[in-house]
Length: 214
Image (cartoon, rainbow, N blue to C red; front, top):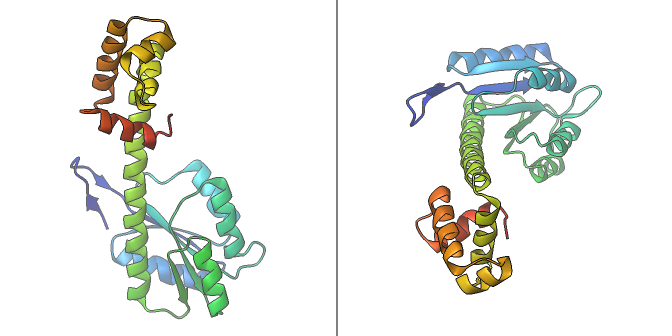
């Protein structure tokens, strides 16, 4: 269903379904469309990848993935997704599941393992969980990108001062290391704090930790 974001804009929630059984795909599509979710269904993993390459999701999404399929299995594809950096929350479905398979699925980071026939509500609950997880991930990615852009807006001198500060150096030590005056260090430090929108040294340190800058 459509969720209203703080910006006032609605994001379309998308569910991708990969299952080689056309009847299963149709049933899941009908269910999800009935609750207002956008659905894209595929009979093979290669078709899904080709679609993503052309039309990546614009809003939060998750994947419903059959485990047993001709060619590449769902489990193998999940591992491939991780290698490719595809971080879509994944719900496994299967007609022949067991405990060992369920455990293996969870080790790949799947959020749910449902054995056919499953209750519609169980699938919907898992999908809502997956979409909520992806929405949170997208928000965190957006925040991280904004921080990177702030960091990149700093001059080389300002970045050098900030990394010195984070290392615990005093202004005079940074000045000696960079061969500039203490006044220059103070000016660069103040400019960097303003550009990074950091209200305190502790906040600046936390930002650089998130950016993995030392």
